[in-house]
Image (cartoon, rainbow, N blue to C red; front, side, top):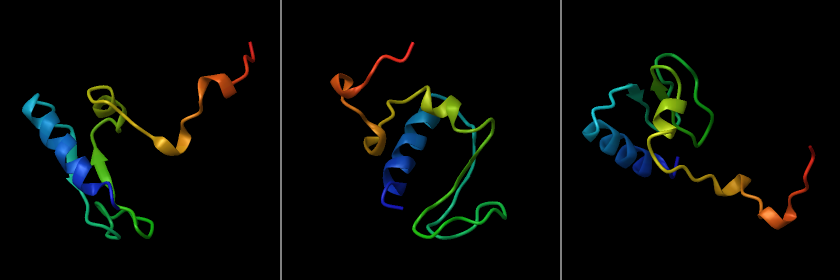
Length: 75
């Protein structure tokens, strides 16, 4: 829910690049196009999923970053 402002900024930037894949950005704790949203979350409905948008902007997911030295080669 805290990321909604940043998402709106990213969507505005994508719109300036003529990317128009967003159908609806929901409000916190409100269903999006009839799909329930978990508590303290908001939904984004996009044509083709979020992958096309993510490829156009820098993505950052601090909850899943791992220092390279802590990783082990598996193949």
